[in-house]
Length: 343
Image 1 (cartoon, rainbow, N blue to C red):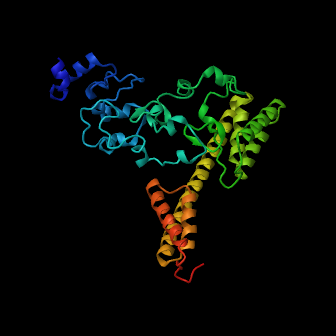
Image 2: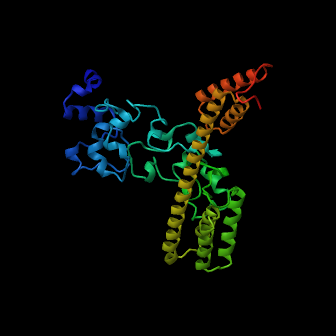
Image 3: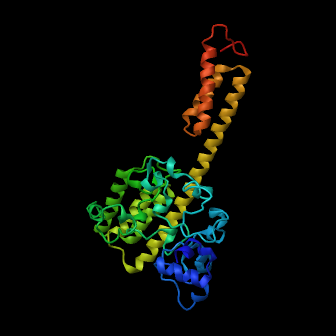
């Protein structure tokens, strides 16, 4: 039996499955068995051989699952670990498709900072949105103390059970990873602002303010591009516990509208960031040209701006710093003159 386990690919399919189910739990049903004996909903196996056949039985499937070689190369047929045979390490592999923006924010979630995407996400399939290992707050409570969280203002209320309504799982410019896109509006929205708006919504609800008036407040914040206040106030409405069953649908409609506006704002910020990157790159090329023409002081100023942008890869940073040192040495030489007679 040990010999067959070591060379499992040479065993017959039936013997192979019998062997695997003896040693391991969670081995998926064979394709021909799935109709009569569907896999358990909570199965977390990583059998890549059966993954394509069983993918349609799950709710959320990672798009590359149907093209295994994109992540695992050619060595996929008999591998049983989700990290075996990867063509690149995580998170670099993930960043080939997903935008790497998290590390450029002020506050970064520890799993993101560690580059461990699999801390929270399944790479193949999941019953939970965004391929989470399990939904919030259960996933969050694997690291965060639920009792300590419930002691935070408002967090013990029934309305606050979806952590990701207020917090991002990746990174944010606001303390405690609060969600508050503000492109085109307020740029100084912080945690204290968030708490203040949240409290205001609770006070308005306690005073019996009409639901339609409170929704109008959210829409006004959205129109003014103050999306942080819009989200905080909207969360305050729900957390107050004053939303009736008939008003729940309208609240959800407004929430979806807010999310759409936040996505637009995020895309605008990303475009702005790319424009800034292009400007920095252009400044670098201009500085190189000035250097070779002998305009050393102009070149030095340009190189300094490029370095201070924070966008320069480490290897290029060393090169630019070498150019600056050469310029400094040249400028301290008494006989040095720039191409246009010096500046």
